Image 1 (cartoon, helix red, strand yellow):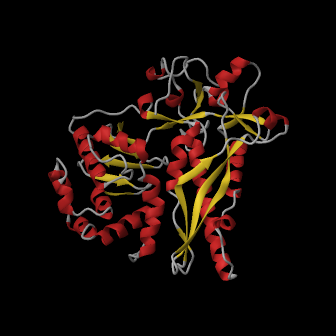
Image 2 (spheres, one colour):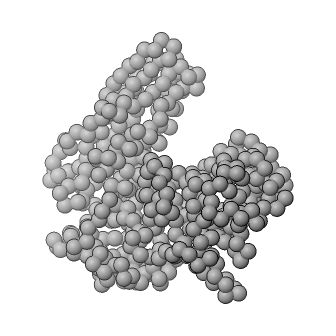
Image 3 (cartoon, helix red, strand yellow):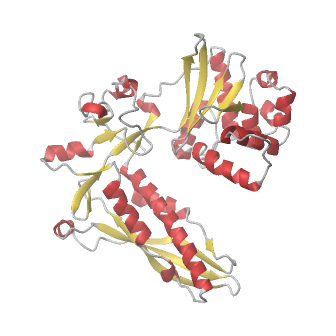
Length: 422
C-alpha cells in the first residue's frame, strides 16, 4: 500500500521551490518516478551487514522564469528499505519488524460524566488525524463551549466566527437556533461582531494572553499553526467517520474540520441533553484504527521530503549568491531520505529486532498489536479500562496473549482469523 499509494500521496505534497528573487523554480514531475529492484539479494545483505533497499528515482526540473528555459534530469531521492516475503526488513544486516499500532480513530465521540453535583455533563471530543483533541461541552444552562486548552474554554459562537461564519449562517444551519440565541448577550455580540474580534478573543483564551492584543497576520499564522493544524486536520479516515457519525455529505477530500462539522456536532450535543441520540464507547474496536507499517513508512517519507525541501531551498539560495548555475542533480541529495529511514528502523519504539527463536515466534511477532509508541499511550498513564478485555475483542484480538508487568493489556496479538481492512 505504501509503494502503490503512499509514495504518490507524499510526492504530490512536495511544493514548487523558488529562490528569494523568484527567478528560478524547482519542481518534481510526479508522473515519472521509479523504484528500482534492490541491487543485492537478501542473503548477501545479511552476510555483508547491508540494508536491503530500493533506490527511488524521480524526474525533476529547474525552470528559469525570465527565459522560460527548463532543465530536466532524473535524480536519486534516496534508498527505501524493502519488505521481504516474511513481512520483515533487513537493515544493516539485521532482520527488523515494525509492530502495528492501535490508535483512537479520528472523528467525534460523545460521552457523559457526572459533575460534583451528580448532574450529567455531555461532551463531544473531536480527535484529529495527528491525535490532537478538542472538546465541545454543554452546561446546565444549555450553553455550548469549546475547550481550547485544559483550563480555558470559549463560546462556540466565538469559535465559529473565528473560522469564518457569521451569525446568520450559524442560525440558518442548526436545528435549535433558539438555544444559540439564548446566551447571545451584548458582550457576546461584540466578540463575534467581526472575524478579527473573534480571532483576538480566541487567541487571548488559547494563549492565555492578558491585555488587549492587536490583530495581525503573524497572530493568525500562530493560531493556525498551534491550533487549527494540530487539532482540526481529520484526514481521510476522520472525514469518513465524521460524515458517518453526524450524517453529513462533505466530500472525502475535504479533510479539515469545517464550521458545518461544528454546527452538526453542537446539534447532536443538544439532542443528547434532551435525551435524544446515543453515546459512544471509545474502547470499542470500531472506534479504533490500525496504524500499520505502510502508514508509519509514509509518515517517515513525508518527513524526509520536508527535510529535502529545506536542503533544496538552501542550496538554490547559496548557488545564486555565489553566481553558480545549479542543476537538479546538484540540488538534491539522498541523505535526508536515507538517514530518516535508518533512524526510524534503528530508534523508533515500534521497530524491533525480529524474534527468531523458532518459526512460531516469528509469526507471533509479526501479528503483534501495540497501544504504545508515538501518538499512543504509555505504560504509566494507561487506565485499567483500556487494558481490560472488551467484548469487541473476541475473534479479533487474542484475550490471553499479552505482555506481563507494566504493559499488560497494552500489547496483544491478532486472533487467528482476524483481518485488517483499509
